[in-house]
Length: 332
Ligand code: BDR
Ligand code: CA
Image (cartoon, rainbow, N blue to C red; front, side, top):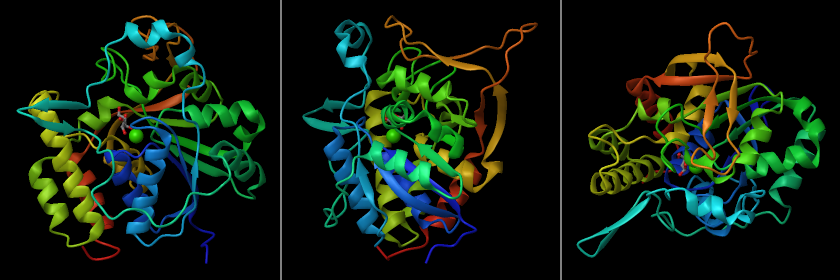
């Protein structure tokens, strides 16, 4: 039975370790009516991301439908020079014969038994948003290919979107390249379509997620909750921490669980402690700044803001939100 007071949401994921934690949080929250989960390519090929998503849904005994979406970016892979001009994202490394990964190929939980829907994710997005009697909130934590495609298929859906709360972008240091974050870098055109859509947007860039990194003590606390959700989240925090330690990508700080912070912001406004309304853009020119998020902070210029950008988060509060929600559901 759907509760009409719950916020109607669609998550768009590329599961993925941090997407898995975002899904656990969203599914276990009583505040959302999740109409469906759409899956994009990104952390892995779209088939793997879809089966990982189904694994999480099954782990919680949920029947939320999962729709597979785009296997490639809108146009990026057509211009080969772009792909090779930029330093690749470091998400795995081999040391002393052992491979360390930020994202597992398959999640360390039982294989999925439920099946994806036959409808394509973009068709689901268009039909569902268009026909919903109530505005829908979109939570993309993946390259924005599905979102960009849906907006190209039917731009009028923008009118029925309450807001988009997305994880992506970086103001300053990137991860997929020196200046670009992975979700924007992997499909810059789609990111630009979304940002230029006129829809109310909240952006959770690397600035915010890196300010709320989790530590091994946090992982232990999640596992000690005794639930399947807590165990998976804790194991994934540890797995990501192992990989980052070997790759030395964290500079001694906690491990960001990027995607879960976007969901947490919807559940508790106070988890973001610094956010500003700003005019954002995305570079799509294929050079060294391809996929970079640009924020126009010049004084004396007229630039109407098109997004609210989060810069800092409260990591203790983030942990409280995770513990509160991941203590629910099946036992470990
Ligand atoms: C983002 O890229 C992906 O690898 C993560 O799942 C997250 O959505 C972080 O840059
Ligand atoms: Ca993701």
